[in-house]
Structure formats: C-alpha cells, structure tokens
Amino acid sequence: GAVVSQHPSRVICKSGTSVKIECRSLDFQATTMFWYRQFPKQSLMLMATSNEGSKATYEQGVEKDKFLINHASLTLSTLTVTSAHPEDSSFYICSAPGTSGSDTQYFGPGTRLTVL
Amino acid sequence: DAKTTQPNSMESNEEEPVHLPCNHSTISGTDYIHWYRQLPSQGPEYVIHGLTSNVNNRMASLAIAEDRKSSTLILHRATLRDAAVYYCILRGAYSGAGSYQLTFGKGTKLSVIP
Image 1: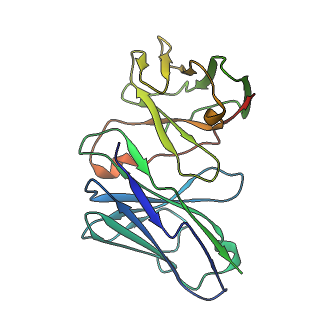
Image 2: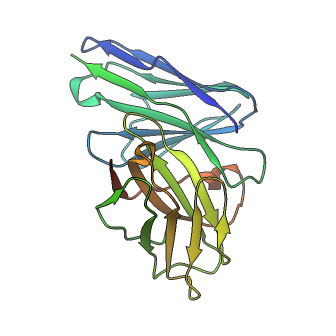
C-alpha cells in the first residue's frame, strides 16, 4: 500500500519557539493532505486540509496564523506550529488519500510534540 | 456527518474471533462505512470499507446489516498485534479530494488477552 512518512517522529521544544513538521507521500502524489491533532486518550481531531498550490482550509477553532500549512509540492505538506506553548503539546498526524477516487486514506506515523 | 456509536472497549482472547459492533442509525443512502484502527503511538491504518454488501479482505471482514443501520467488523483470529483502537466512520461518496476527510469518534479499544 501507499506510504506516508512524517518527520520528525518526536520533538521537544521550548515555549515560544516554532516547530516544523513534514508530511510526505513516498510513492504517490497527493494534491490534498489532512492534518489531525490527537491529545492523550482522545480521538483524532481534524485541524486543516492542505491543498497543493493553494491555501489550506482550517477547521473551526483552529488558528491559521498559529498553525501554518504549506503544501509546496505534490508529495510534501508541512505544518509549522508557531510560538508553541505547552498546550500545543500533542500527537500530530497527517494523512493523504490514495489514488484519485480511492476510498482509502493513508496516515503518517505521527509526530509527538512536547513543548516545555 | 452521520454519527456512529461503538462500545468503549472490548476484550478478546488470542486466536479467537472478534466481532466489533458499530451502530449508525442515521446513515444516509450514499454513506460508506469505513473502519480504521490505530495501534498505540501510531497513525491510524485502513482496515476495510463497504456500502451495502459484506466485504472481506486479508485483514478482516465487514458485515453490514440489511437496513445498514449497523455493521460489524470481524477479526477472524485475534492476535496480540490486533490490540488497537478501532474506529467506525461514515463517509459520503467521493466528491473531490476535499471529501476524503474523516471524522473520528472515540472508537473501541480492543484488548487481546494472551
């Protein structure tokens, strides 16, 4: 099946710094990718839809100026958490749909962000 | 999106079959039933999906009630590696890449006992 990778797998940063998380589709192209956030013992919450060549679409309540999304190519989307605070500590997961019309989503392994 | 209801947790003995139920009484005629699972500290992975007919693949079987208001994910022989949270998700028919987004509920945490 298709593979989606994320980098880094885990990151620890100081409060106030910015962190960039990369999501790559390794063997297929993805014009759309999705970013989710998962707090401990909770379910995944969709944050935004990343669109190649255009602006991301953010879910209600997600600050677009804090969570910057750039979908620069057909295989790469990045999420930058700007001025991170401890409450941003979470498990961030990206996903991409398979080939056009496919009903399958492929998820990355996730990035564990800890803000001190 | 139509809502799904799943038990919070279930237990199974290793090498026994597991039936994970999902209720979706408000499902619409064009909603597909998807199942994903999430192993600890990993991203979710696709398990199976269907519309009306029962479906089988190498991972599991999906039994869909005739009125489509419920479905059951069947793991034929549970292994320790099947311990995960299983999510039952309804998604409408494909209408462009943006329609691929999935809305996750709380899922069922499956524990497998050796």
